[in-house]
Picture: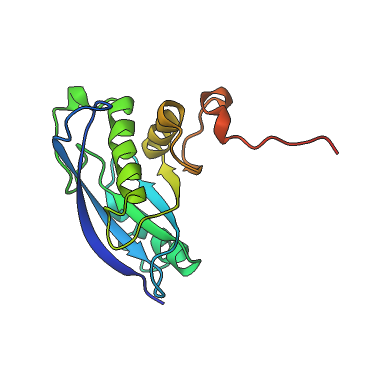
Length: 171
């Protein structure tokens, strides 16, 4: 079944605790049966926008949003600040990995507070591709506010976010 989607714009900051002077756009999608308690926040790489996650031009063949919502997860595919999408365009000199991570920290807080729509999300998972993955790794290290991370097209040093790594016990 097709997901139920809506457009959401949130005020965000690029400095922790700073003014929320920028608007971050995202496409919020839920499974056909309604919102889940788990939200995956999807962050694209450098040359894309939120549509990366639905692969325009390929139909449903590579549609991450449709696959995730079909598996019962809500998704929020964002346009990073300064990207070609619908979010604010701050001067590029301000858009460091830390600034992007801070804006996503505001998104995570909004998701937990029920500010994306009709329901609050108990669990938030960061999903990134390329630069989006690097941003999530920085954010996880700085804020520790996501329950997990799905990373494609980029891998961090394993020491960068030890609280996200699974510990294994010897057999």
